[in-house]
Image (tube, rainbow, N blue to C red):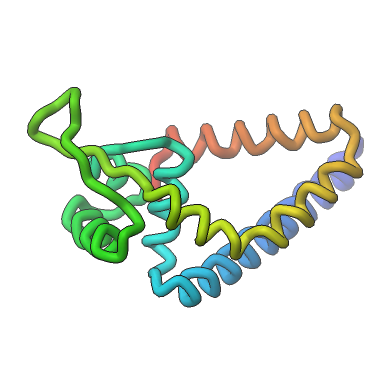
Length: 151
């Protein structure tokens, strides 16, 4: 592949990624408004769903929020019944935060159409190509984890 073609392809991919991210953020913002949450609150719940029960310190590291900001966010989420704080069995000085599965399921209903549409797109792509896409996202996510939020 020529250097020029490679540059065009890279620019096209970056534009598509930016468009996907912008669309995702705007859609998530609409869901947040419908559920009475803030966008950051929803992303905290997303992190908790992906990682499982976590300490507030881990959430601060993952979200880029201060520990004080995480505390305020968790207070809001707990008051609304979205999360629960429990004693940490590995450290009696800390707590573990977990998502309320019933609230998560209710929130997930807002994503049913998108999930179905995405599954339909995946169904039309050969497994070898899906493997390439999965490796791409795994590498991008690994860079973000190494780098940390906003660094």
